[in-house]
Amino acid sequence: MIRLKDVELEYPNGAQAIRGITMTIEDGEFVFMVGPSGSGKSTIIKLLTAEIEPTAGRIMVNGFSMNNISQRQIPLMRRTIGVIFQDFRLIEKKSVYDNLSFAMRAVGASPKEIKNRIPYVLELVGLDNKGRRLPSELSGGEQQRVAIARALVNNPATIIADEPTGNLDPARSLEIMMLLERINALGTTVVVVTHEKDLVDRFSKRVIALEQGKIVNDGHAYYGGPQQ
Ligand SMILES: Nc1ncnc2c1ncn2[C@@H]1O[C@H](COP(=O)(O)OP(=O)(O)OP(=O)(O)O)[C@@H](O)[C@H]1O
Image (cartoon, rainbow, N blue to C red; front, top):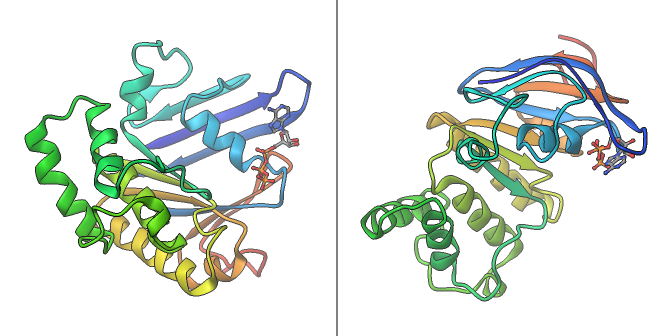
C-alpha cells in the first residue's frame, strides 16, 4: 500500500513542488496519475522511491515509512517497487536475457531462481523468443516490454511507470497499457504517470489529477472531463 499524508516538498531552490497531498493507493489498484507539466508527477515518483525526502508530512510505501527510513532499508524498500521509464534505460551491451538476469543478481537471486523466473516473465510480456537479442535489435515497443519485464523480475508489489508510452506510436502505446493492465490483474499494483489523455480515456481506471502540486481530482472520471 502507498499512503501519503499531508505531504509537502520544497526543492532547495525554494520551488514548492508538492503542496499538501494526501492519498492512498491500495494493494492491487491500477491508478493513472495525470497533470500538466510541472504539476509534481515526477516529484511524487522521486518521493515514492526515496530519491528525495518530504519537507513535511508522512509517506508509507509497502510497509516502509519513508520519513525515518535508514540507508540500509532503502534497497529493501526499492525491491518492492519496479520502475519503468519513458526512455527504457536498458543496458545496451547486454542481451534481453542478461538485462533481466543482471537485475535479479543485483538483489541476490540464485542461478536457479534466475533460470526459472526469466522465461516466465519474458512470456508474460510476449518476448519469449527474443531473449538473445540486444536492445538495439528490438522495436521501441519491444524495448519497453523488456523494461517492463525487468521491472517485474524481482516480483515487486508495485510497478510505477513514468510516461511509459511517451516514445511509442498509438498502437504500441495501447499494447503497453494493456500489458500493464494484465500485470495488474495478476496482482501487482500499477501506477502510471502519463500525459496521454486519449489512453487514460480508453481505460476505466482511477485517475489522480495534479495541478501545481495539489490533487485537483481523484476518481473514476475522465481526465479533464466531467465528474462521474
Ligand atoms: N530538482 C529540482 N529543483 C528545483 N525545482 C524542481 C526540481 N525538479 C522539479 N522542480 C520543480 O518542481 C515542480 C514540479 O516538477 P515535476 O518535475 O514534479 O513536474 P511534472 O509534473 O513531473 O512535470 P513534467 O510533466 O514536465 O515531467 C516544477 O515547478 C519544477 O520546476
